[in-house]
Length: 153
Image 1 (cartoon, rainbow, N blue to C red):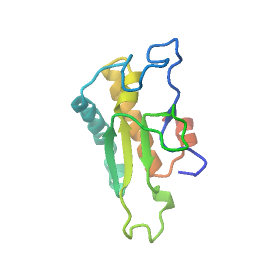
Image 2 (cartoon, one colour):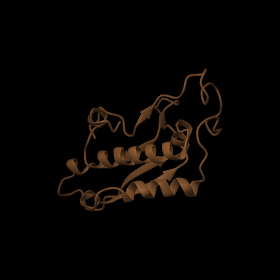
Image 3 (cartoon, rainbow, N blue to C red):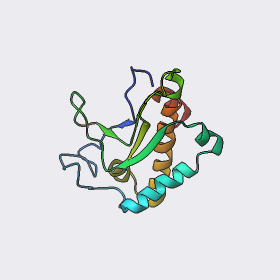
Image 4 (cartoon, rainbow, N blue to C red):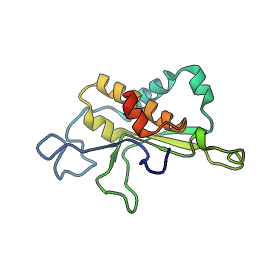
């Protein structure tokens, strides 16, 4: 991913006059859909299983995780909300030395922000699938800008 683009998929939290907006603590799910961690994990697994076999086989040294929420790091906007995050070296940027002791790339899908923006099980399944595809695309070197152009933003 080019250095000029932020990792993951930044979204804007709802405004204060909408459910989930305002000054409510981030750990309180004020709006959205409720789903158990096991059900959410199944949705992520289903999204991964839907990746075409040739594409899945082309993925190299990448692990997928689920976390409750993204916690912005030092120097980041504390109000940053991400649905997913790709951390690693895209396949298009790896050289012949990359394999020598490299840790796996990491894709993290964030459960709470996805549930907060969804109103139904179908919405969650769809949003998880879009987020998984979006983050896998980063593994293949596709930028946020291009993903938005393709409708996977």
